[in-house]
Image (cartoon, rainbow, N blue to C red; front, side, top):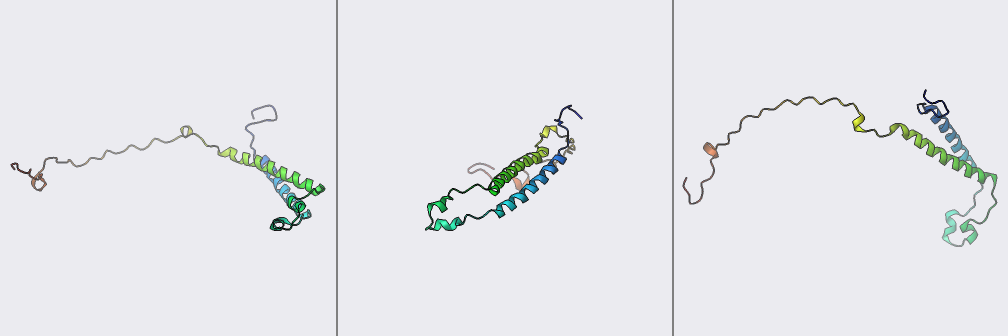
Length: 135
């Protein structure tokens, strides 16, 4: 192993990827539960139809509960872990240069010999006579 510190560039990251993926799954389950436990504010798109006060249209000022804070934290953790995992998953599939690949030399092409072409007109292949000229 190269490196004497914590950062080792040749370390296989599959174990870390699995741990972070497990945390992401737990966070998504927790986020779903926290969102479902919150009380609805009512209205929704029905408030846009008319007859709704400005408070219900803009949401009004509501007390911040522990469920609201947990939903924000779980959402932020979900977003951060998703970005980290997306970066880790594309790390192994970086495009490589064509010049770096070992390509076998192509097989030699066999020369094709074509039958000789007779360029002199003979028989039926004579050019048409010139007008007013001799043949």
